[in-house]
Image (cartoon, rainbow, N blue to C red; front, side):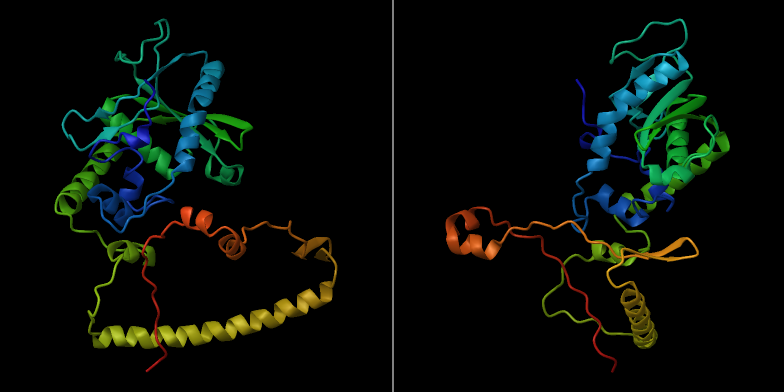
Length: 317
């Protein structure tokens, strides 16, 4: 049976978590990872459509790998755990079947020293990938492979990636015991210090703070310290400076737009400085007319939104 890996995650730290745990993920902060692991109410559910797309394309990428290398691969849908640390798990995309052996059934464990991760990436992220055959891959994928090699004991991890749906490449990561030990130490610390105790790590952004405190308590007031009051005053000073810069930018923008008139592009010595083009007309639902004409239908499809907090800094005092 082909399971949805994202809906059957065991409790623990997975391969796609390790970069976030270290603060090196472009998609998730350490606090977001913590909120996910402890089930914090401030973390909103993600659609995860890019993850589902990756799973959908995975068989194709694996077949391209087989075609390019002449090797066969073996699927592995069940999570694998580290022999010593039960919080360490991994959902391995494929194992590379040793040359000369038959393809195995999905439930049979094979003896191999190479695992395979199948990826897709936007053509706009091409500069994050180096020469094929090297270890020059995005950091989060490098750490994911190191995590999986620590769990499985494999000596090599191949990454097969389809860039922009047209550029297929294969990269090879070799096992690094020193890196593995560092990852395990950091993961143990995170698991024991934050997840087990349910104490959050340091917030790194405004969105992190919003996760920590999704709801207000009616009537509750917080008292500002002298230091925080100074930060409040600095905020207004910087905001005023920003307003002046914004005003200057608007003047320059107006100057450029007036010079362009009805032109689509503004050029200088063959270089395009600005464009001003018509956008495609958009269509939107006229909810007021729908409500007036079909109130029953309108009420039937009304959906109450999620409660959120609106942050507002008052005028300088």
